[in-house]
Amino acid sequence: MTLENTTPERIQELVQKQRAFYATGTTRDLKWRKAQLKAFNKGLGKWEPALCEALWKDLHKSYEEAFITEIGLVYGEIGEAIRKLPRWAKRRRKATPLTVLPSASYIVREPLGCTLIVSPWNYPVQLLLNPLVGAIAAGCTAILKPSPYVPHVSKVIEEMIADTFPEEYVAVVQGNRVVNGELFKHRYDLVFLTGSPSLGRIAMEAQAKYLTPMVLELGGKSPCIVDKDANFKLAARRIAWGKCLNSGQTCIAPDYLFLHKDIKDAFVKAFQEELAGLYPGGTEHSDKFVHIVKESAFDRLESYLADVGGRHDKSKLWIEPTLLDNVSPDAPVMQEEIFGPIFPVMTFEDREEVVKFVSGREKPLAFYYFGKSADAWDMIAKTTSGGACINDTIMHIANSNIPFGGVGNSGMGSYHSERSFLAFSHERAVVKTPTWIDLKFRYMPYKLFGIIKKMLMLSAD
Image (cartoon, rainbow, N blue to C red; front, side):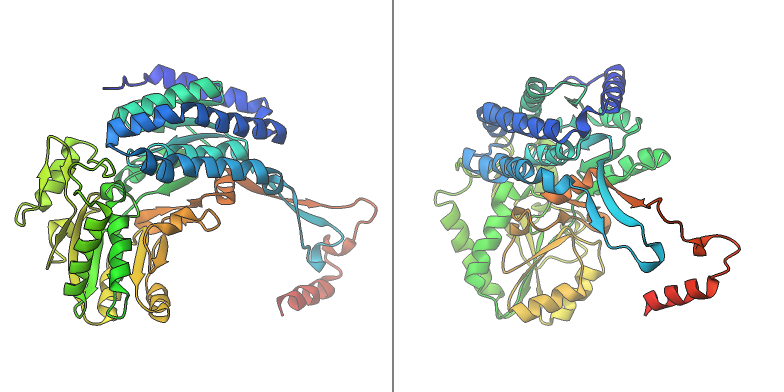
């Protein structure tokens, strides 16, 4: 199945329609926003079976994994936004210093305006629709650009959005990189993009002339460290699950393993046992193991196995989860995000080796450490990443009460829950000054300067 590229003329029409609609002020009304969120929830329920079927066709993703990692997360975001929108959008009174009295100070959260949301193929439902929840809640319009590499999912999303919202409010644009280029030519009030660092750079360069604010959720090589005093059997289970989820095609998948030399052999054995427990009949014929998205991605992953073997079948786009032992830091597999079920293994004796290695590379989206809590906090203090887990993998994305986002090469900005609302909002500072009194000390020629200086110095103490 191949999707037809949306034409430049159609893109321009949608941008103009959404700007005109936003200018009417309709989206600013909280009751209207809440009604749209409820319509979104109803539409997702209506189209859930079609979305799950499409995820199976494009990625061999089971219903259970589709719901847990995609659709269920969107339901959760919508439900929380419906419940909490009045509180999120409420005008906030803030403290006012002596030098500004008798004025009162406020923060008003207002929508940014017309937005563009670009999503990747690996989690094509939740990585497109979760940001949309934030856009709707904040009072923005949105043009959605799903990935062409999952055409069945992208087509269903287009039909669902058209069935749920008017196109001047929310619309879908389809196509390849050429369409991305056409989209980036237009001015938006926010671009929210999930994808590769290279695509993030393209979008930033194109939007720089407009000074467009951006939220970029990118990726990188997320390290996974198992120390000598870790519960290595439990670590093996949680790491195997995190790596096999979506067949490793997850932006926060543990990318490479750092094993303490004293537990390396025991961990490898435990990893193999836990993998067999997750897939008793193996992964090749399992309906719970996701396949590689396309042939070019398969070929790239297969090249990492050239010298070590590893079972795979291109006709099925299937690669068996494989550990690569004694990998050199200079090996090709260590130069870019793997995005597949291949796990390079390196060893260490001292944690400072790991700190030096991780800190010497681009900042990752996730950081995973298995071992004592005190040592974990020490490692976190000496490194940086978008997010982290201690004695677990992946799970920080599942808690909407903490931010999800990257840092440096792995992205900028964060979202989920109220942070999604804030990502699509502008916090406007407002000072309200009464007219019944007009203090003279602020006016030229500053006759009361001494008093003003003392007040300012006092506030600094």
